[in-house]
Image 1 (cartoon, one colour):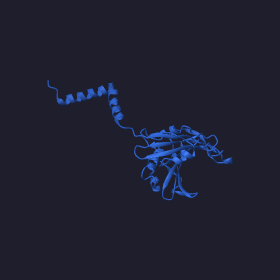
Image 2 (cartoon, rainbow, N blue to C red):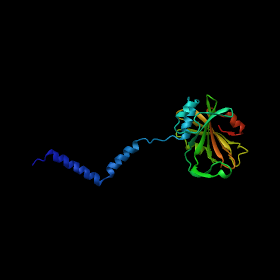
Image 3 (cartoon, rainbow, N blue to C red):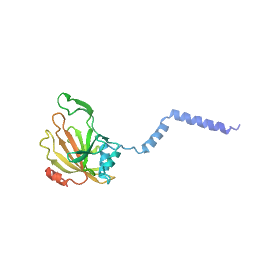
Length: 230
């Protein structure tokens, strides 16, 4: 007796379904292989996004910073302060957790607010037409400057110390010495970072500041009596 072809197809289909039910790992392992072959997208940190723009040919143009979705701008446009122009916004440094952060207000208004220690103030400074520096100030003193910077950039960014043991501000109580770093970005030019600690007064916990400049800060290194590294 000849078996119809449609019955052979149905039998094969039922057999395959039974095999998958008895061996669920066969299909799931194939799906895992496909998922592992897809490159995982690495989100760019707020500091890295700012640094990439600052190091690029467009980094001197105030208007270009409006495109940074990573920055929550406080100032809608650059403001004139003490003869210079600056614009402030909020960014998040990666690698920190929630802490009780002093709000900086004196007297009865003083309080500690629980928030991420990485929530920092960004200040872009320069002339009316040109951005010349970027400063990021986070609450609390952090001595591992290089570690903080490495957590903000992709693994292909080269971060090297160019000077260390820089004199701390004498008025900054409890502040450690500062350092200077060079960062080579894969997609743009090198930038330089001065890391230091500042005392914000008795109503704060002090600050760690990272200041970005487009050229090697030779004079600043000499002025702070830093130990240069080759």
